[in-house]
Image (cartoon, rainbow, N blue to C red; front, side):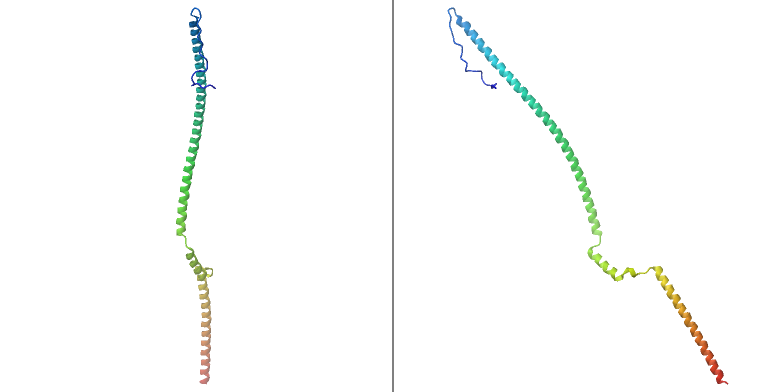
Length: 180
């Protein structure tokens, strides 16, 4: 393409001056000048059309670039909005996790240490709670023991009374034999 800003074609030869018999040279000069002006005007017009086409193409490219930039800007804004929402959600999740970790730490500080559990295990093994009895069982055992003891005591008392009677009978018999 021709450069629209370049000066008009200077390689063309200027029209030759011819002088005629009756001054015909002036007419040819005017015609030559007119032709040169027409050529220059055509050249300027052609260059103007080329510039207008280039300007129109640049305008289309600029419009397309602007549209693409607007679409990209909308897409980036939507993506940025989603990322902000996700960031807010992550922030909330992180806060919840921190709260739960604090609760776990608080509960762990309230839990017994291994040392304490070992001591309790030793005491439990020493006491052996499986062999413990309930109150009802203790009351029953005491009652049974008391009844057994009472029964034994009654038997002993009966035996003693029997022995006492036997001794008294033997003493009476002996005394009665001595007195006879």
